[in-house]
Amino acid sequence: MPLYLAIHSRSGVMHRLNTSLKNITPLGTDEAVLVLDAYDVEPDPAVLRYDPGLRAYGAAPVPVTQSALGSRGDFMRRLGFARETHLNAVRLNAASDITTRALLETLLSWLNRVDGVDVTDPITVAGVAMMAAVLDAGGHLPEDVPTFTAAMLAPFPV
Image (cartoon, rainbow, N blue to C red; front, side, top):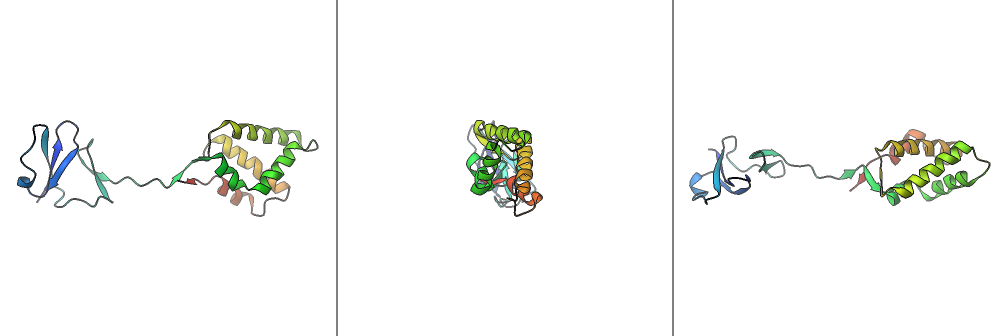
């Protein structure tokens, strides 16, 4: 026994459905009947959802629980206050390597310009690698570099 849907004839939006054709009629002037032979009951909406564009059931969208984009504050909280302080000390110390100081200054400047931090952005990836090297060299990285890098570049919860 198929599933019958009364849909808007132009948009495909479902108005009602039933396994009996007589339970969805009479049709309005802007309605049409869509017969889905593959279904004898309405599919579980957690698994399949009706798509008016396709005029068919498709996989239900997976809720977004993670995002590559997070706030600057969330990013800096991952880094931690002590590590941020050490990086600033290296950046401001005239005796520090000039290239390291310049890279840290550039990273700080970039963080101040962006609205959010995208952990997939090449600048973020390079910045985290540079921070890991500076922190590791200064003894401020209790975990290993790959663990720190993975934690800093993990998607943000939504």
